[in-house]
Image 1 (cartoon, rainbow, N blue to C red):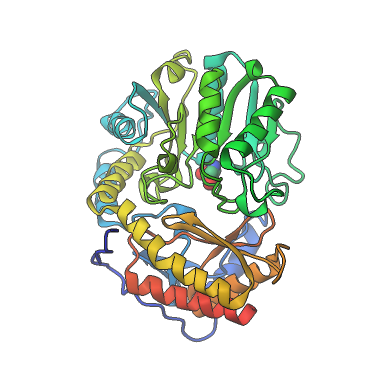
Image 2 (image 1 turned 180 degrees about the vertical axis):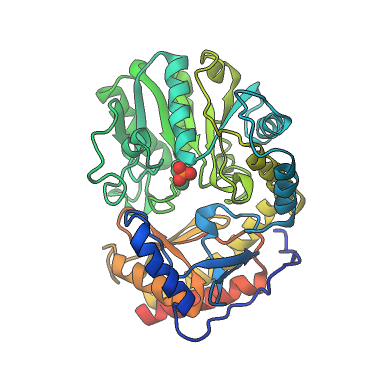
Length: 451
Ligand SMILES: *Cc1c(COP(=O)(O)O)cnc(C)c1O
């Protein structure tokens, strides 16, 4: 039994509405101003400018209302203006916006750390350190692992995405657009084969065997005694929403534990109820040594965290971790409110309900059109991989065309994947059922047209 979606009350009418020319005149004017002053390197998926957002709807400056299947890349899981988050932010901002936790500490930071210690898997003493972005959390998890183990090497996987700073670019797999022209990258990063069930050469390979393939390569190419950390997204995000075969993550975690290697789960995208559990590792009972978190943590405010075993985090000397804004008090207040909403509205249950609504519809669509090679994901982190019919040849053009058709009909969907051929669905977990079904009808229409 899954939890039925309770319809919360929304501030904005939850209805798709596209009027007149598109993008409208106000968005077009902003686009022209932008071209003169904003760096070209920062690209936007959608050519319209946001004016308001709530529940499953984003309204643009011309009054068009889009159904949001992206949540600003898995961030606004509680909606983009959750009343609890809004009032927590207002309340905190009215008192102080910043003191710097490294100068004058405050309760919100401590309360977030307490909450993360309780929510993250693992029945042991934990510590937390807060930052601003996912990349910063990953960088610091690696710093902690190196400091605690006295080792240098770090393993990341094929199709991985860990961020855009120098170290995290090195950890990220895909060159274009993330790495091309931005090197040299940090040393002592080793890339290992992922479990990617749809694209395995041997379709019979089990998760455990895929893990052993990576472990053998680690032992031969690096040596376990040189390895500080094994870093992995339990469900890969930008790489294509790849869910490793069952047994892959548990086997890697077990090997890491046996070899004194820090197992870091990068839950920046998959965390905070997105996959139907608080954290994606929980689907297979995996207990990471360190977890990196960001995106969904604070209802849209910039906050990230590393939580994990006390002896690892506390191996770092005082003053070795931090940053001016890390654990900003307004962001901490937002995080506490967002986590309250996730718990009180059972957003993990709603994510599971979203999966139950979406997957059968996508399966029917795959059978009907022949251009969907794989459907995968968990909870409200779901994807379809587009291929040339009758083959597994990636069809990035189809993904792009489907996303464009959806947008013109008033639905925001994002693409991803090493081959650019994956459509990912990341609705806010507070989206109403009718709105979600309307968006799926639009998506189905777009897939049929492209097929
Ligand atoms: C988005 C993402 C990051 C980087 O987070 P930023 O906040 O953009 O720095 C790291 N890891 C994963 C898995 C992500 O999805």
